[in-house]
Image (cartoon, rainbow, N blue to C red):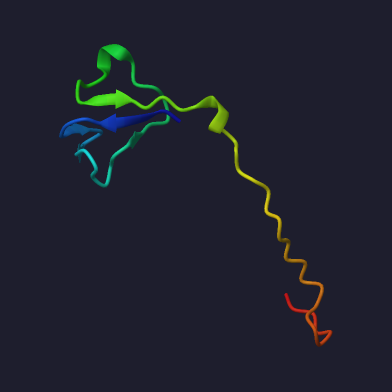
Length: 73
């Protein structure tokens, strides 16, 4: 999903966007065409190396039972 940094206050999608505000960065489901891009938005270029870098969880809860031999769900 493309992200756009807010450079100055402006409206997009019926919402006021301000730099560092609640809706900064602006995340859209589709890229904004260049001819429709407001001058106060700037595309955030993501590093392709950082995509899908989520590490697998090392700890696994097995629910096989605790110290007392009681199985918990």
